[in-house]
Image 1 (tube, rainbow, N blue to C red):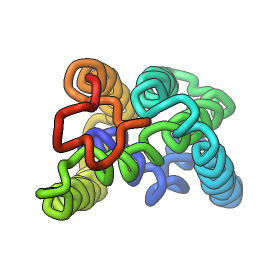
Image 2: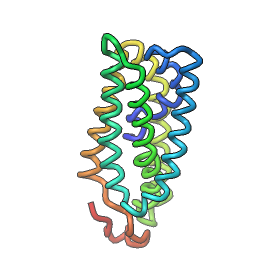
Image 3: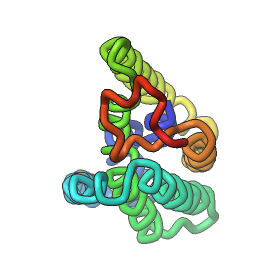
Image 4: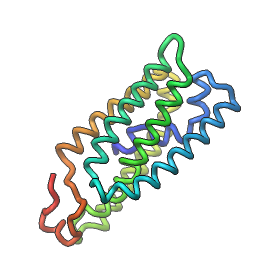
Length: 190
């Protein structure tokens, strides 16, 4: 759920529109959208090398804080009297980078590891369904909220990332280094 409450798909699907709201021309908005995709690709590849080295929770902690900071910056800039397009681009690229290294990669690994063998298939199905239902809801709702509250929709996404930090801290076990068979025994450490 938090993966989508970050606003990731809203940004990926509506990036040119977001950049136009920031004052970019149509051509510039399309080029900036390409920068978003390239950043996502590079940092997702980077996550492959970090996820087993540092663990799932540390990546989520760092990603939650960096995503929140970047999204709050974007929301603030979009609502300021004189938004700085460079700061908006930096904030959005920073968000994409932090997201890709953290929850963009972690959730798919986490849902494949956290469930005991007896319910792993159902658990993965539930996790994936929750992800895509939330993706559809956020994608549908984003234009409505962006039109009514403007850049503050990004502040909402940032606040959700702060909530994700606390959820990770209090509710999520660390699955790195725990054998799948041991999930049945509750060996994952919170």
